[in-house]
Length: 501
Image (cartoon, rainbow, N blue to C red; front, top):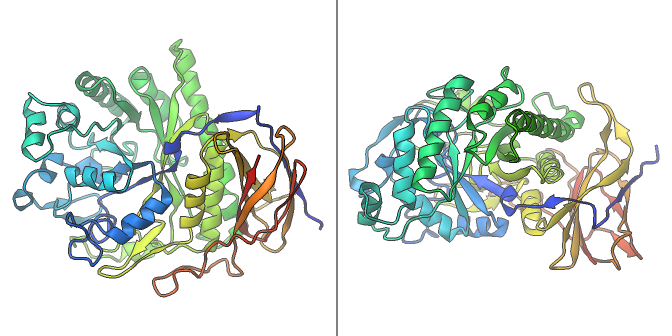
């Protein structure tokens, strides 16, 4: 079979200006994400606050615009007051979501300090599991009110004269999940989310709020949960959350690489549900989406089931990612960019050690996992306007998903830099894919570089001893002839074609 693929893009046919926060990430008090991840006092690279400098260096490469904290399932049992003030007075707690001991030696203020050094904003979550309305207003007052009240003055007594001014807040986490501490029905959650939203905005009217959508597309209440929750909260929140993870348990790589098509269906269904409630309420407001948990997650499942409870920061959810996982992460990034008119925020879950692009060894080094690269490329080069991708591509069928294009691609126009960046994945596992890009509306085109992430072994991984086994190169073969770009995309590859226009 002679494969071929073509994409036409026009600068006047834009999907949306991309919100930089679509390249966000997530740090939860889970496993070694915090302790021995971003925070390891005594490490050779640690600063005076105990923040690992080698990890901060890798995070700065990613240019992460926003990081969600402190959970995740953890937040539904979170007593934020335990985490502030003198460390010697902080309480150790049994952490029920992940069955570990939480020392609270790294807390709310430490995370705010760390976020500044990581050049990122904070997306803070409030506990609507064991806590509720009172706790929600108090933490906003502690964080964002200047002075002259109990909670704001308590913050100042802790050494923070100026408010943190955190502008993005999640109203709980995965409250539809029976595994969640304080699990609620859609009506129960809708009511507490509404009342919490009201008082949080009375304390600080400038904040934006994210209501919990379904924990995954496979939840039995999806999308009825979204409709019921929005019935209560539509006028008081700016975003609805989506969560989705994919795995390759059956070692069926063609299906695994096609999962992003299901991700797009998920986004379209949630957007349609939001628009139904908009119509029902005769509202003029468009509900935006926060895809604040997404990734590949399955490698560590078996090891986690065998872990003894009540340890401190054990190695949980430590997926070691391979080359095919990086391709799936690339397709998931493209899926969200294709819907950047609705998906304004997203969080790769998570950032360090726990299902993460960055891994560390305690007391040792830090290295880039395979999924680091598509995430970094999208964040660094994917700023600007997403253009409508008119794609012609040969297709394949799997036992579960049909009409899967071998090419998954999108173009981003950065008008200020006079650049177009094309992200492209060749899903074919055995053949290269001839790829033509028609830039007919641009005045000129020349290749800046063609970055390729490829490997002869789909299961190849990076480790501390072999940190560059799977790494990109910029020896791609893209050429420009007038306003047409020609390239051959290597089998099973992630590609970044940067064009000066």
